[in-house]
Length: 299
Image (cartoon, rainbow, N blue to C red):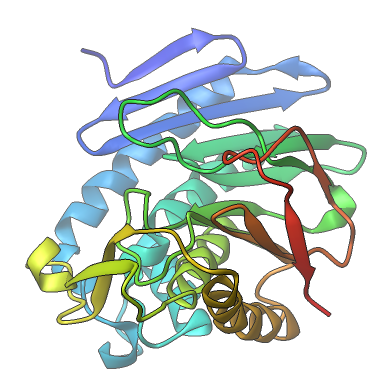
């Protein structure tokens, strides 16, 4: 099967090996599938590069030597994780880093609005006057229909948002926390990707309701060693949910103060921690459990 397919004028699919990525590019109000298809070839080159650096990508950035010449996509992933936290491996930002590379290339071809979706992690490029709405939803449990939208991020060029990414214990990535979803919006997709991972990990709890295994039991080559990885979460009390949010709030405030994120949403069993000082997020519909959605608004 051809790895690059034009699904429709405003959507080009890259489906090859572990990569499922879509590219939407517009210029002057019209979809530009040729620009998107050209950018898709870069995505395939990034994938080949990452395969050559698997060992490097699985080492915690705090242990990686600095100054080594690296391909742009590998360097971007490592840089984002160094900024967010030394305990991360570059794998925490790889999806976002690829999306950034592809989006920047499409922009260089003349696009004025670009959306690259790499497995749910988004790189966004908006020229002045362009707007975009990004829906946020928790991950769908295996075999079930997608959950309802929680809300929408309303973005424009002035927002400065270049990436939106999510993590959580129910998702594809390994997480040490109890958040079903930790979503960050940031200047780049790589930063959003790394920050979402850190925010999800920051909701870690040690209680009877939480089951975990060491990371090396889940994936011997992941590079996280004996770091606990959440495998199941039972019903949490309001006090336990508050404890999980305490760690996430500290992490969110530090990331925001450092300019690494513009905002975030962390969801734990129907309650949400929200950092949205620019008021970009609007709620929509009901949360998955159908309970009233109460929010601890980060100060």
